[in-house]
Length: 509
Image (cartoon, rainbow, N blue to C red; front, side):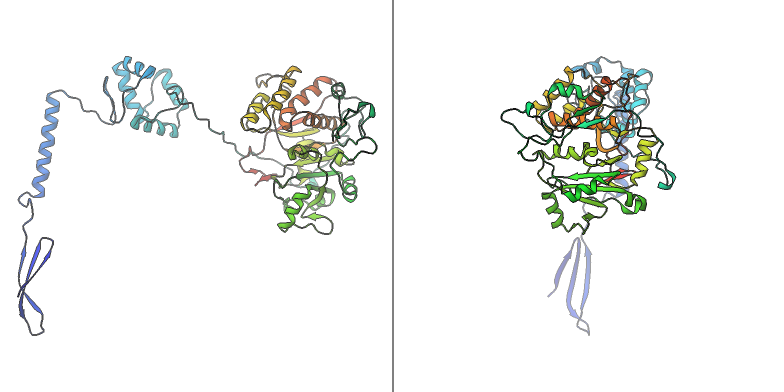
């Protein structure tokens, strides 16, 4: 019998006769005719060209205009767009045919326009914005801003690192002669609360109970005794907080130049200074002190960061703080940040470094660059994005950084005492910004520097722990109260503006 096998349109017929090897011998191979086989590909293309030519002749004869690339004429919409409503649609309908043609072409090919509109477009356009305009014109993507009810999307400003020309080595720097003899007056500190000022019931406070009258007098740079933390209670009452071991206190009294930081409440991890970038002289003569509470210390121990026999982890001398003075860890952190002259009574210079930073340069080179070279006694970085206290208040409330009522009370108090908005166009503006960044503070322990630090800390203790809100007020009031005694404050640009690396100096990890 013959068997039939079908493969597509090919039919193979195999007979039953076999050869000597037993293989079947094909008798006939036939191909099924193709559908539309009478029309070849060449004839099909000719027909298509003919139909196309007839179509264009027809369109030309009846004067029908063909639109390409979304070009539109009055009363007609482009390929993917719909008629616009409102003011924009009214303006579009009332514009001339010439302007419509110009707009239709330039929206796709970015042809420069003439006149004021073209000048503005040339000044403000960019490759990205031109690309967005093309997409919006073709697919009718709603635009933000004036043309739409959608509010414009705020883009975060880009910040780039700037060069810091530090000295090449500590061997090439020298402390200026009589550098610390700038303004002469003596400041003493309230060590114990007077019984006549005690309220009933009495509550221990680390900063004491400063009256508004005493606060007002404290801004005058004269020989005085003022509140500046570490105020002890009356006889028989306990400590107000920030208790240190006697061995640590002895070590801290021997420090002349200090680099300090703190971690409280296990809020961060330990970042060690880059040892290879710090000179042997600084390793011997500079104190690197990290303040921790017991909770943070236990966390470091569990991670394998164990202090050696001398109490060091790398270059950091670990100092454990017991009996924290505030429940708010942020406010507690202001003690080592602002009161270095109280913690290190023999020190002449101090560098405060936020725990999220890593020291990447020699401390003496930092002192030379920010203080000695500029003849300043206090240096702090200005904020990378905000300059006005009004903006800082709104930002703190928007991000819920602190209780809104407490922020409003502090802000209203400052306004009633003369605080005004920052005006960058004022040639007599005393500071380049009213909002500091605060992660890096370099200071000489001069009388004015120590007074300013105490005043700033008292504001943080009295009001909110957001020290950026009280910085400008404290500086301006101190300056206004002492017109004949200058305070040389260097407010420098943030080195990296939070883009990842403080070039040459510190890194943000």
